[in-house]
Length: 525
Image (cartoon, rainbow, N blue to C red; front, side, top):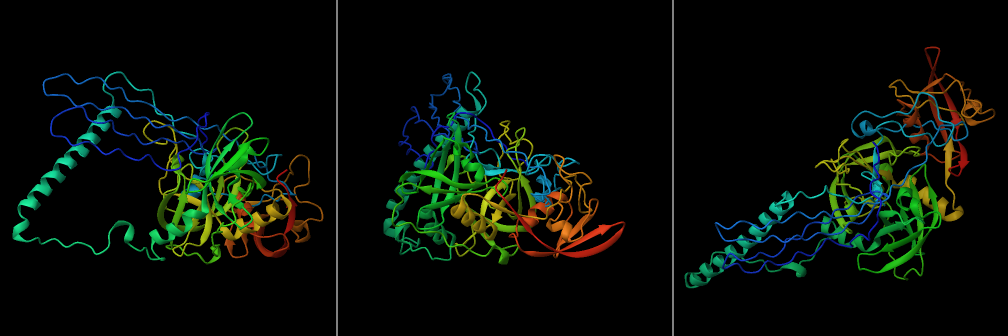
């Protein structure tokens, strides 16, 4: 899957969709009120804010030429947030493979045949895009905004759509009036309709319903606006991690603001707080920010157990897709342990590797960093990447949901977040060997040559101590099948340094097993 960053300008994202204007009564064919056009928002960096256009759609009497109403284009674009390239090294032990867009239910993209000297390894071709964040996320751009094509002279498509919308609203008004008149005239004959005892706001939402879960979780989610020192940035999402004011989100959501930038977090009630980056892990794509002057009544979201999630379980995602804050979507867990390597798709970008939860809940740019909840409202993942078609659709090139979203399992994200809060730096598990990122279905091959002149198998490292040698092909890690280098990296990073794992590998056509104790690597450098 590849992440896409688009746009440059970063206008403030709306905290909620625009409120539609009631259409006036239509007794005569007069000018209709302008139809609100939905805001367009590009994702990741992924996430810029977009403006709202409101072209007027006049109606006219028959036999009279219709006035020309060019469609208005709107929506600033968000700056791109390049990710650094990861190169598998012995110290970083990039042995996990990530699944490319194909891994999201399709083929898993792989990296170059030889490991890149930089670390982490670069994303393989076709990697998924960040799931909509500050640009949102690796999927569809990190918080970039959508820029529609320039309008054509004359009554364009946008005008036609707006006119149809207004016509529908007017027709609805007439229908309602007619219905009321008929009901009033027939009042004496007795009504056969049945009215509910409770209406609108008086209805109580049960805790186990989607509405109940959303009502409880929304107050603990925030829309994050990140701006770099160059003025570029995007929009993403985050959620309350503890009562001290820590917010967990994606690294790619806040990356623009790490060095001298600005961060703010806005709650659904409209309260906005300045924030600072506490720590960020590019390889895991996890970051922690802290609110300045945090309120005392923060309610952290309950963290679930992502290891116990089953395919088919219900999911609820909260985020700000295309800048539309506080948006709730639903779906199911459509797959587990999906090897995914995601990036913004820019030159020299670094890949993030995960063994992801796959969901068909609608995830778009701006959703990045937001919580993926189970049916009880517990956080089971952080929405991070999406698989999208090569063309975003409608000729815009902007990525959008096609039902393949990926979330970092919360068990892994919780460990990373606590490390960032404690030390400000991420800690990665490693095997101490360089791994080929070449696409293959046979396993993860330890390279014959190291990165940057280093040994392919680190002397005295975990792999060497376990008896592994250059050229060995790892096919399983514990009971998890390893089909490529990126998959191995993702699987290793689901563990903690010091964990003991069973490695199954092939050497000279023979299968062997060995026990290996994972080492550690501090920081992204």
